[in-house]
Image 1 (cartoon, rainbow, N blue to C red):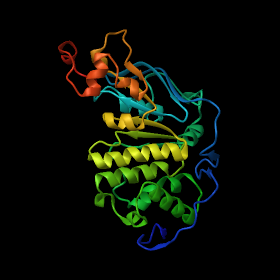
Image 2 (image 1 turned 60 degrees about the horizontal axis):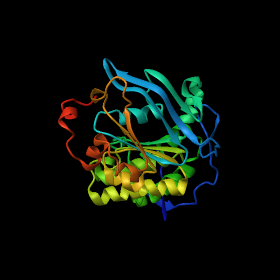
Image 3 (image 1 turned 90 degrees about the horizontal axis):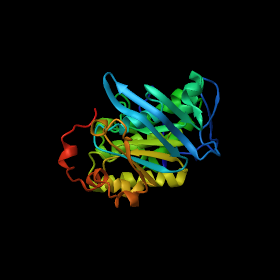
Image 4 (image 1 turned 135 degrees about the horizontal axis):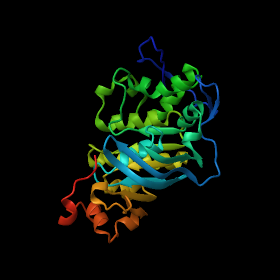
Length: 308
């Protein structure tokens, strides 16, 4: 393997032999100066919870009285038609949005009870692969992956280089990809770079927002394989949002299906299915089976529109 010699003020096209990744798993925040145990073991079986969460945007309610848990070490997949609140749910779990009401817990402790410094520290345990990869256009691939390490740790550039190259290798990309601009990448390569960036801080929990959207079947299979590989190698907890039932079958330990509020009565739960990937393919609930098979719903339900 070859390493990438990088400097913020120099060209990143020179490659040097890389050293093994640093063995220490403890990073120190340059902002908070608090130790951050990125892969610290925890005994609790529930990593994250939503308890009675509501979320509205203006007059539009997207989530109503939603309660769910994410179990440590599992791959939880959230499905449902567009606009039912899947991505909003993951952003709430990750602390990227705050609930209108209700409670979010990380490791059994309310997020609202944490100080700003604690929230910043604990967010570094989370990795997020955004739907469009959300790479910084003004940075090359190397700089994108290194960004979080530079902003949140006191690692040297040599250590950062080693981590960046290791993450590129993990997602099946050659070291020289580090010198490319995001505009030079295919859709599948952008997803892989986004995953490499999400893994750079060695997170405990990784969120994947529509990881295979816009990809051909072969590249979708590659991304699904990386999700499974990441979970197995790193023992991370994964939360995946998808419309792709092939992805559900390949990666899910547990599946939750959300339903649009506009199609529900006031007392009906927004969660219409919770179970294994095998069980969802055999569900007799017409709302679930129609989605799984890609069929039109019954006229009574299809007259309504989903939430925004």
